[in-house]
Image (cartoon, rainbow, N blue to C red; front, side):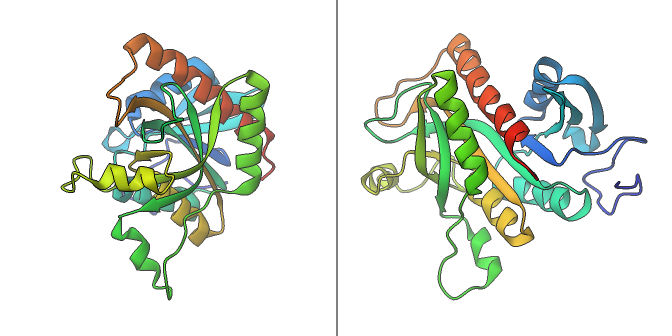
Length: 244
């Protein structure tokens, strides 16, 4: 069991608390609070350093944690590295939103990221000959796809694009990504998969299409909440069903 003496200045466990083996990570720490209060049984606050809130509770009898990651690969990479390296975490599931690219991608679709292309320089730190392909854990991906099918939720499994830019300077970038068969664009998945691969741990990214880059369509606040619920149910079922 991890001690309360933290090797990190970013995560400091509250006395008597710990992280579960699987951590769900939305970008927004307030969304982490919402997930803990609405989906987990008996959630306990385990970290609030820099208001990056983290909680541990149970779902269907299995211990699960949830923690915010912040925006972008550098922020997520910091927290995921520490969860894997210092706090005994074995798997992280990102739960977030994304902008749709493909013609067959619809609003409210759940995208299960099989791999993540990226423009982030994060990958260069691993100093391999060539380009590392950030890839999901297969068992978790399989469990998520099965859960979506059981729930009757439309889920697209394929490649996503992780960008360091929310406002990209190349106005043609999205057309190029669409032409390569990329399903959607977001800002964290590649960093998550690289950290899991480097630490020999597990990771999966499950995303909800909240807007479409080319059609300009976007979900209303009510629709975002309904589709978020579907994504969360898939993520939680994946956490429960995966053996660590």
